[in-house]
Amino acid sequence: MRKDVRILLVGEPKVGKTSLIMSLVSEEFPDVVPYRVEEITIPADVTPERVPTHIVDYSEAEQTDEQLFQEISKANVICIVYAVNNKKSIEKVTNHWIPLITENTDKDSRVPLILVGNKSDLVEHSSMETILPIMNQYSEVETCVECSAKNLKNISELFYYAQKAVLHPTGPLYCPEKKD
Ligand code: GTP
Ligand code: MG
Image (cartoon, rainbow, N blue to C red):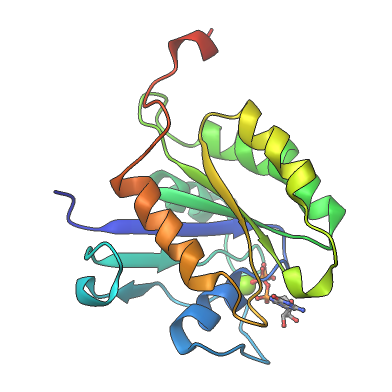
C-alpha cells in the first residue's frame, strides 16, 4: 500500500490553480488569492481513498523553472489546468505542458496526468470536443474534468480522480510501441 499521494497543479497563469486548491480546502470561492499557496496535506481519514494527500501549487510569478522541474519529478500525479474560456491555455496543454512534463519525468515511471478545465461557470458549451483527442493521443492522460472553483462544481471530484489515478491507474504502465 502507498503511504501518500503527491498532487501537483500546473498550467498557464490565471487559469485558477490557486483558487481551485483554496476552494477545495475552505469549501468556498476565495475572492482574493495569493499567487501560490503553500503545500497542503490532507489527512488520510478525510480523503476518499484514505491516503494522506499533499497538494502542491505552482506559480510562474513566484517560482523558477528549476523549482518547477523539481516539483514535476516529485509528483505522483499532475493536474494540467486550463481555463475553458481561454483557448491559448488549452493550446499550451499540448504544445508546452505535456512535453515539459515528459522531459522532466523518469522515462520508465509513468506519471498520470489529469486535464482540468476550470471556470466552467463562464461558458455555455464544453471544451471536451477539443480535449478528447488529446486524451486519445497521450496515454499518460488518465482523465479529464471540467470544473469551477467559483461555484465549487466538480472540485472534490477533481482531487478524487487525482488520488485514484495514482492508487488505481487504468492506463498501461508502459507503452513500448510509443517509444522509439
Ligand atoms: P497564477 O498563480 O498567476 O499562475 O494564477 P492561478 O492559475 O493560480 O489563478 P488564480 O487562482 O490566481 O485565479 C486567477 C483569476 O481567475 C482570479 O481572478 C480568480 O478569481 C479567477 N478564477 C479562478 N477560478 C475561477 C472560476 O472557476 N470561475 C471564475 N469565473 N473565475 C475564476
Ligand atoms: Mg496561483
